[in-house]
Image (tube, rainbow, N blue to C red; front, side, top):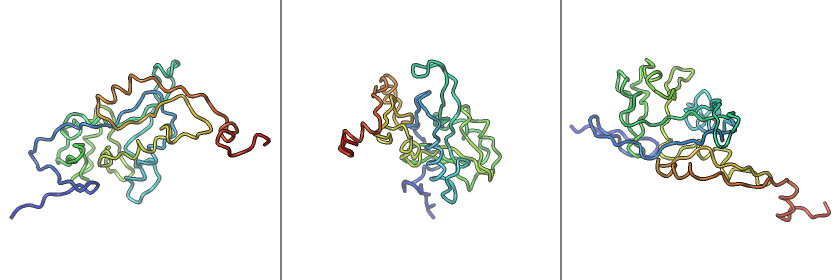
Length: 216
């Protein structure tokens, strides 16, 4: 009798079978260093998508904001914040290689290694096995690793510094922090200079849009 192959719940694609040659993840999460404002909207969005009851609770997030005291072209004093995100290493990634129960499977759409909670025994071997410290532990003991949201990462869309998320009355000289791109495309983004924008006062912005009269 032919075994029914499992499907990924997010995108409906059929899982790879054991022994299949899985390509490396082509499109990954990237972050621009020291542009993060520590608003934690990415953590909130991730927890909302992944928590069992749809909670807005960062203990369920698969992305964490860390202090990043690095000198860069943006932060010359070396003060800033940096999203700690899964690097989606070459398949099979180190976290999956140390798993004693083969609890990792590969999303057929994104090729990302995902933890199958039904097979996971919470031995936590994958936590120190990750070279970037981005396998996290939930309060229940469940192991949390980025699954790229099936190819539509919630954290990227929620990043408050994206141009479409900024208040028109108070613009900032910055680029978005989080990107979901192929490595070559992100390399081009890195070579761009942050777009300079003049800060506009709330009243000036309202005047320019005809929201209030000059007499006000």
